[in-house]
Image 1 (spheres, helix red, strand yellow):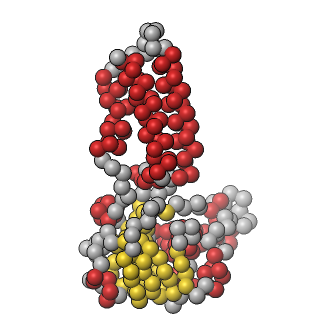
Image 2 (cartoon, one colour):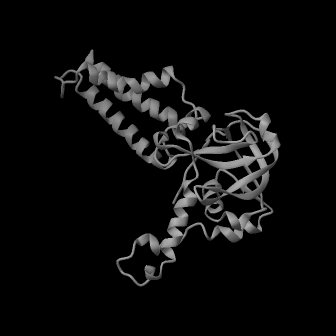
Image 3 (spheres, helix red, strand yellow):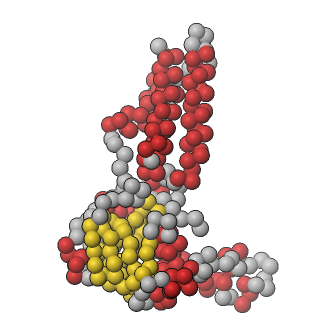
Length: 263
């Protein structure tokens, strides 16, 4: 009986992971760049299942207690009982919204401009590292409307946060979910997305503070596409981009709602 249970667990977990890959639901749990690790896990689970089948009539290779079986069955039970879904504003209220990238780059730029940055061999490597987002400034300045698509969101988001003064008055369009907290005014909200580095356990909310009379018609968790012009506000003594809302349209949630940074 236990042998069949071990076979079922190994092959069942393999089928579960394949299901997540095929349906695209895997991105609701881990960054897609780790898909190859999931594929490797599927192969290992299948191999372990075959080993259990081969050893069906023999003695147990190692003893497993009841708790061990329960731990292995837990992922399958949770998948069946709790359908996967994207993180939403209820999670954002616990994690808060991050505007810290702007502050981080400000500190980094100060290091780069230090006189000893290029002459001191013991200088911090960050002091001489090239800013990967500066190259996007001319491109964004030429565009009539800065459009943050799924492919460009990460790079454009950081560029706008690092150099908000360069884009004051530019038109912008993006999609995201509506989020508010107690510190915001009645005509303010955040149009946000979750940024995932490794898995959803480390997800943080990033987004743009948006201001305008039309914000009053929107509720938390509404997915919207907003169009507006960029202004500059202050957060923690650092400049940050603010969207002056001109038009808003409710849209369906994106199939892959998360943002993945490469730098």
